[in-house]
Image (cartoon, rainbow over all chains, first blue to last red):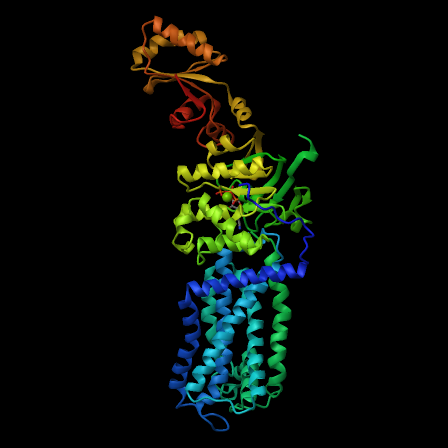
Amino acid sequence: MNATTRRLPSGAPLPRLGRALADAWTITLRDLNHWALRPGTVIVGWLFPVMTVLMFGGLFGGAISVPGGGGYFEFLMPGMFTLTMLFGLETTMTAVTTDAARGVTDRFRSLPMSSSAVVLGRCAADMLNSVGGLAVMIGAGLLLGWSWHGGPGAALAAVGLLLLLRFALLWVGIFIGLAAGGPEAVTSVQILVWPVGFLSGVFVDPATMPAWLGAIAAWNPLSATAAAARELFGNPGHGGGSWIEQHAMLMAAGWPVLLVAVFLPLSARTFRRLKG
Amino acid sequence: MQEAESTITAEGVRKRYPGAPDGTGLNGFDLRVAAGSVCGLLGPNGAGKTTAVRILSTLLEMDAGRASVAGFDVRTQGRRVRERIGLVGQYAAVDEILTGRQNLVMFGRLNRLPVAAARRRADELLERFSLAGAAGRPVGGYSGGMRRRLDLAASLVVSPPVLFVDEPTTGLDPAARREVWTAVRELVDEGTTVLLTTQYLEEADRLADRVSMLKEGRVVAEGTPDGLKSALGGDWIEIVFAGPADAEAARPIAARVASGELRLDGPAHRIGVPVAERTRALVRVATALNEAGIEPEDITLRRPTLDEVFLHLTGGAAGTEAERPAARVNAATGPEDPAEETV
Ligand SMILES: Nc1ncnc2c1ncn2[C@@H]1O[C@H](COP(=O)(O)OP(=O)(O)OP(=O)(O)O)[C@@H](O)[C@H]1O
Ligand SMILES: [Mg+2]
């Protein structure tokens, strides 16, 4: 084993940030390799929300009248984009718990790379995945007759807010994935995704719910993003009189920032926290 | 052993897992591993071997005590420690979806090898651990042994000054086991300090310069493999006879060369003769038996195996001192046992 190269001594030429970025890229590349080796997983992940749209659009399309007129698909699609971001939580959690269960996380932790590189790599890969998923959904929406009526700038702003929500949920996923430390946790989140999705403005106007339920739905971070996306895409929405509904645009940025502020440090701590 | 020479030290390390009963985890674990040596950490299931390795490799925080690796405090200088260690965990930690080669290239990159060097190193290691044929297949389809070999290869992408290996050869076939031993030995020749946990006493016997026996989170014995064996008791000659009559007749003859009390094992017509001077006693007893016209089926010069030391110290099946001859018989050591010299 004479050809072995020793690790660079500490204080290596590459500055710390550069090293962290290089390591993060290696981790991202690993996920891209996963996609290449198992394209099925990615494609099913992208098509699942499309299936959900067809199902709910078909089921409720006739029964639900949209506030302010317009077709149900026009109302539903921005909500479904939001839900797609929520589905991304599972992708993140599955990846994190699988690595933890297989000991890969421990191996990463025993390497002299910064913990931020590991999560940053995960983050980049998942964001890329979600950009793909969102593109597929927008394409499917256009095929189904949904369209945006604002300018391209507003549409891009909507996409930006959606991805911001995804970014925030990423940290929630990393935290739960690390803290729960078992595949069972993923299953419970897969189930919980549905009540969280339903208890929001994604499918219906919270005003049509009983008052207390409607209040919870209005304060659901998904509602803010869905409402803001509807506004920016120029799709029919559901005004609503409460403070939270009046400030959808603000909250669509505020909720994710709050989630990141809470869960990013928590994730970083859990990753480093040395538990059995 | 001087303080300065120790590459791995642990003093009074304690770790209790939340909710775990008393006596689990580590309870005042002490260790000192000299630079460039191999330390074998032995102990029954649940003794705390993995816990010790995880604490020393900065994966787990200790409750109390002190530990340093390569001169850096495990608790406060984790990053420095991680720059100097390699870790092979108890369970293979490789990416199941990636191919074997992709795994090694990835770990090479994370160990700061340039892309070309990482690829070259990956191919070298695949060749060396007989994985070249499977290099392009996803690891999910590997056998347990193949996965283990890949796992080891991933830890040897760069040769670290200190290597922790937690049961490296569990589940490997004899050829692969030898491969692993050779790899560890070569690292040691290059100056790497190795802490190795194992269930295979033979492995510790072969690889380790010193052995620490762990029981309930504490080191109960420490020394060279030979030292531990002689601490348990000296050598003895084991004679097996064709029948009870022969055994009975041989007893007074055997007693003449014995340095202690004879150990009799009736049903197997076996006599254990503790001896002080190994080969001379063997020649004497063989000659005396020959002159008396007794032809034994087998005469063996034996010394305690590490297995017996292990069972004795960790309170396994061996029981009390007086019962040990029976335990020896049960130890079922094969003819290839390194501690056995058949005449
Ligand atoms: N995460 C954990 N939570 C609670 N208890 C634990 C945990 N990990 C280990 N233990 C307990 O600590 C003790 C020591 O475990 P450890 O894994 O260090 O043993 P070991 O010597 O490596 O055993 P083995 O030979 O089976 O690998 C055991 O009693 C075990 O049950
Ligand atoms: Mg163990």
